[in-house]
Length: 157
Image (cartoon, rainbow, N blue to C red):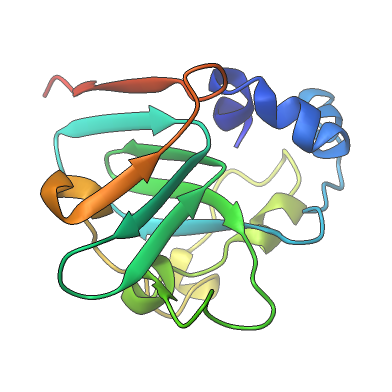
């Protein structure tokens, strides 16, 4: 999660306490209200790191993919997104919910002395995913050139 704040300085302004806690390696880090960290398995050779992006699928299934930051780097994908306490936005489902990405917020509570944890103890099911916008012709993607960095490329084997 520190990497998300490193590539997107805008996040430091949105969530200053979280940024400070991560930077200072605090023993106890809490996720701000309305924010969640999601996780999936990502076994592909491309990487993508971005800041805030709002995406809406316009062809086929109606769903959205809205992030404050994302890190797709094999073998895992991490997405920092908003938590909607009242269900789908205007009847449009989140692709993260549909694919079953678990919320990994509680992982922030593990101290620096923990060097390994069995994933089966943290999540019952972790989906294997591609990036949701792998077919960009189905999606509208909105972002700001001023606050949204995009780093994409192949990861050498």
